[in-house]
Image 1: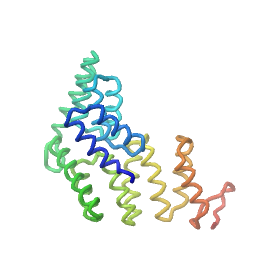
Image 2: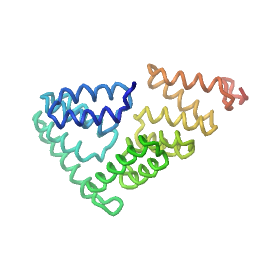
Image 3: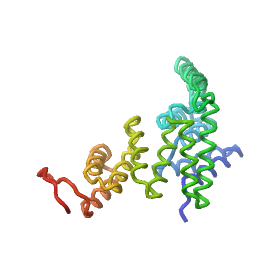
Length: 247
């Protein structure tokens, strides 16, 4: 039976608490290999690599966490510690300044670090609802989380996927569009943006998104599958001649 990425991260946390850093690394690398790792997985993987004496690899994972969530205070602080360990003091100080700035910002009436913690707690509650079959309740929790952490695009991505599952393609499209606008390198979100467009009945937009994604990530088999799906569907598309047709 396949184990969800969320459950693998929970198991990795358990190994980490037992100071079994290599066990945590093994589980987290499995999550990363799925292509569905979020900022918390990359952060914990970076921290595990750091404590296992591999600072360069740790830094790569912390950077990936911050690419997904630039306001991830714990990742900023741990990044500063790893940079200091590598003798890169100026960069370490810059990371600490960024962490202090994020921590002093107010979101939802709370200081930044408190808002971030609350956002993650709401997301955790959302995951619990989702696993219990409460999709609508999970969505509500994630919506609260994003009010507290609007820049937490890993949470926004999860919300978008749940909205698709709930049949709310237009709402999902809005979430994925925000991610793609703010993080053009977040290619998984781009793939989901195309899917949301398709499910909302906009085959033209879906094709445009997926063809651009194919040019950027030709090795991804999902993109070809999506385009093949579009070609077999009855959603209106534009052929090479530029004239609309109904397939």
